[in-house]
Image 1 (cartoon, rainbow, N blue to C red):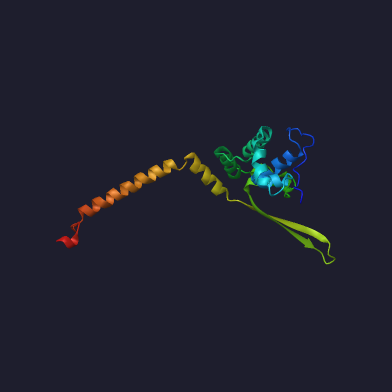
Image 2 (image 1 turned 30 degrees about the vertical axis):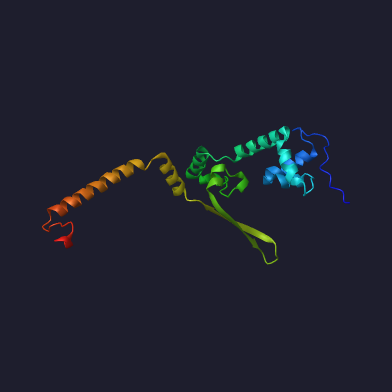
Length: 197
């Protein structure tokens, strides 16, 4: 008769009050959100993991750690309208001069301010080698995003085009009214249904 695989050993508790098996369960569960798989990763037998996984989530201290870490992850990943507008503004108002050092050379990307990093659309480094195989230089090509696109997004968000759209709408309505009036003044009769006569 084969002996069932024992569950994880309890061991000492960590700073969150979790023993070794519980900590392994929480780490795996937070990555994959499947209690059965997390139980297997924590050391439970695959045949019984479908029972132990949900049971682990019912332990108040384990659930509290899962909930707390999930809240922190969601808070870090939260995309808000304010954050999006701030990123668009960085791209719209980026000062490309900040990419260059005092001697006019391109600074390393790690030294670029955040607004330039937002505006960056691509970068290519081409190395040049001499006949002896040693590097003799390199060229860095930087492609920046379209600032007009960022400005356009900001104008739309801030309602900057609303006044222009209202004026354009009034002008179009006026032009249509003039066209209809011109048709009514024409010598040709307007017939609703020509075939009905």
